Length: 282
Image (tube, rainbow, N blue to C red; front, side):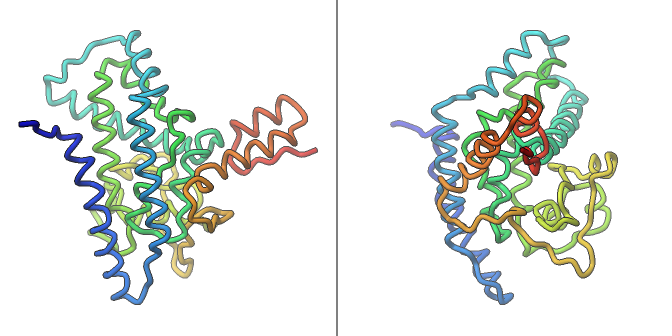
């Protein structure tokens, strides 16, 4: 008898779990007097399903090739047979994730894909798995290459990153308020991540942590929600479409339009690798 492996079970179970979670969240929001945007949910679900197909086809793609390429030049080979190596991996992944996430928001090339994650105008669990389809092109995950260079096995790094991202799923909700102070001080929480998803000028470019919030505190990118300044979710220039293709391609179309207006090599460079808000001047 054919037995399904863990990955196949996940492929079967996740499409069943996500609608159930959406229904529960919709019911809880309704009890608080807030409607649930089901069109945004379906856009996020289609985004996730297409991304799964893309990743399946590419089998690691450019990012995997880069990580394994760097691993050929590693300065050590860690066997992951000591507790301190796993602890170092945890903090190493968190540190690299912080800088990758910061680059996602401050470098337009990386923002092209990451902006899809920030496109929902309503903040729900479905936002967690709206991540775009072009991550293999923008290749922000190359920020984890130092871990491969230091000697951490690439599959272990990828697995640790997957667990880091899995932790962040529950952060994408308005249904959980502020948690105990000690927890809020050390860990990333829904309260911190709601601020991260704000498009208000007061909340732009902050709270980049994955599991922890300590690197934001250390590097000056931490912010709390301000009294009297409710969070406005979505992009600075909101996208109101529910078409997943339009959501994914709009940032790329915007960059190509700006490139056509560029009049120098410097303007071309800044249009692609400058801050997301850069516009070439004639």
